[in-house]
Amino acid sequence: MLRKVAHRKVKQVVKRKRTSYSVEQKIEVVKYVEEYGNNKAAEHFDIHHSMVGRWIKASLTWNVETNGKSKQVGSGQKAFFPKLRKGYMIG
Image (cartoon, helix red, strand yellow):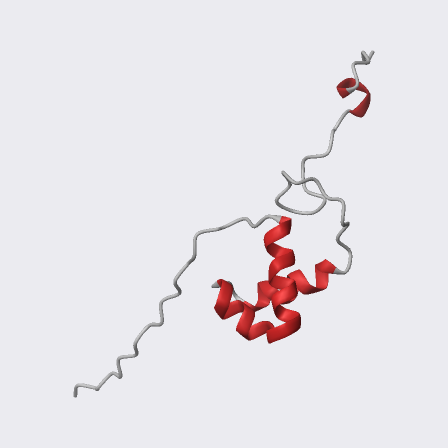
């Protein structure tokens, strides 16, 4: 006896290419959120609404005087051997 098997459609997840945003872009999004809300900002800037929420939360701790070249606030690799980087010899 043959049994009928229900075929389900498999939902495929579309992965977006990772994009980095400058601090100025993030501030622009946060200002837009204040006027229109999270979901409207996410649609307008074509980013996920959860990212907008993270930026709003993080914006409370952003320093106004950030490095203009920096993509993320406080980003950058920290020195493993600070004395060596300053020109001191170890050993």
